[in-house]
Image 1: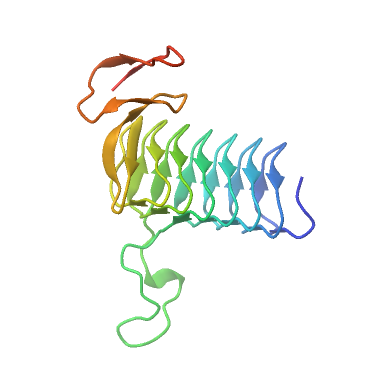
Image 2: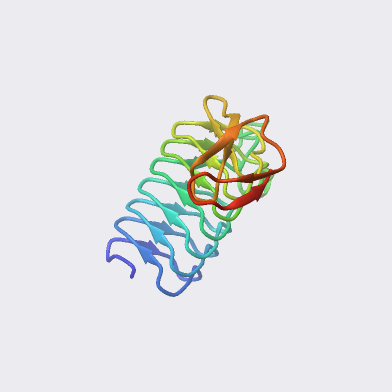
Length: 186
């Protein structure tokens, strides 16, 4: 389903059963998997890649160079960046164009969740099933199952695939979730 107010450019790849809601803009060259949900006013840039079963809440910008693997959740008002040294102009004062900057990439791995209002800087990876707390500014790598929050975001502990907190940053080895009984290795 693509809402009538959404702008999906020709050349964008959209998987089956994906819902694109009000005022979304999906650029040509964007790749969106199956069974995804893009909430109101989501922007997906050319070159951005979304896996299957990705859920993006309202007012999120996913820029070129960002890859969201299968099952990623992105809370409302989250922004991803793709330029380490952003400038509008070159040294000579001329307006920067496509070839005047270096694209930086970001990878959000399977099952990770990013809370509302977060900013994710580029050149980093957020690990599988990691969780970023609302309002965080992610400036460095987040390990698999890591729980981070704050400005800048810091590793506070670990979470299970079900999202329940497992323990603090000193947790190591095989851990069993007290809620869903899943076992993971940290």
